[in-house]
Amino acid sequence: MSLISVRKTPRYDPALLRQAVEEHFAALEVEKDLAPGMKVLLKPNLLAARKPEQAVTTHPLLIQAVIDWLRDRGIRDITLADSPGGPYTEGRLRSVYAASGMDTLAGVKLNLDPEAAPVEQPRGKNCRRFDVIGPVRQADYIINLPKVKTHGMTVVSLGVKNLFGVVPGLGKPALHYRHPGWEDFAGMLLDLADLIAPAVTLVDGVLAMEGDGPSGGTPRELGYTFAGRDLFALDRFLAGAVMGLDPEGIPMIRQAGERGWGTEAPVLTGDALEEIPPFARPKTQDTNFTGYLPGFLRGPVQAAMTRIFRHRPKILREKCIGCGRCAESCPQGIITVTGGKAKIAPRGCISCYCCQEMCPVQAVK
Ligand code: SF4
Ligand code: SF4
Image (cartoon, rainbow, N blue to C red; front, side, top):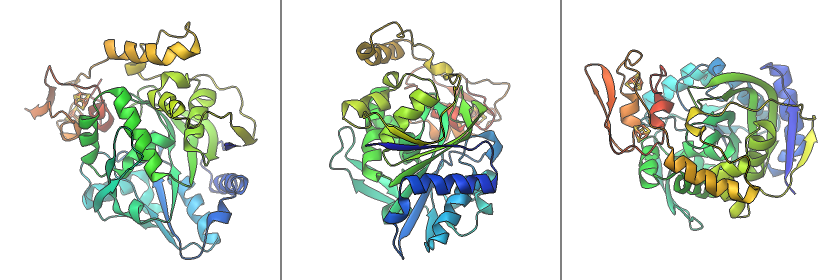
């Protein structure tokens, strides 16, 4: 049985967030898992150095509520870790912590050690070896803390996609390079999620993002938090029932179903979900004409359509500030910055949209 806890959480108010965390974790019986001396790892979404109100990163007040809940149960060894986009260095981590408000958190260690090592994934179908950052390898217990967002390449960024951040820095473009097809990449993400296997996922859906996520979309007030232990069932529920998207048109969710993961109808507990208007899809995903087809055909037809009609990124020269973030993240190495402006070579693009994701001024369309 996949139990999903739904709580109305209309704003980032410490008392409301604390109550939501209490109720989510009571419903999922998280306390039973904990033991004195455990190393607990919090894995938020820290994609880039953005302020909490930009809806790119998991909100620090929700994370603080989780830390306080753990400390009240005697857990003292709590570490927060993620590898943002770009190089995995102490300097980059410090700047992301400062911008996203993580440096205001109390009672947690913010990881500053850019150490990582390979881990085998014997069950991997698309990928059997991942570089994984140190605190994730060393943790006894992992709490996954994603945000509800759309995503140019993977359609949604929820629990599964959030775990891509356990791969250090430029190891991420390397995985894009090794898995250039959207379907292959989705399978790789599932292998990684199966390897990391967080004990519980608590989702920040207070302020979500729609449109051209995960960094250049539009913040959208959603007013809920969600939690579950079955990561794949939770993603399927959030994409379909909350964001109003077709889960079968999202490769990583459809493929999870093909592996037999997350397909069981979930049991909901907590607050009723009100009618939510569908989320705006990323422009890169607007080639879905499959709504008239029977459900079993939608996934394969959509996959073929997006291959044929795939969007390519374009640099808006008037906005570009020449920072080079896109170039350092491009797995194909086809972006150069000359004369203070980025330029994408005409061939070689695999439509991963890492360049769009990392651009701090939304100069990639
Ligand atoms: S140009 Fe952008 S979308 Fe194309 S491969 Fe490079 S990072 Fe990915
Ligand atoms: S396109 Fe964006 S990320 Fe790339 S150099 Fe210009 S401003 Fe920087």
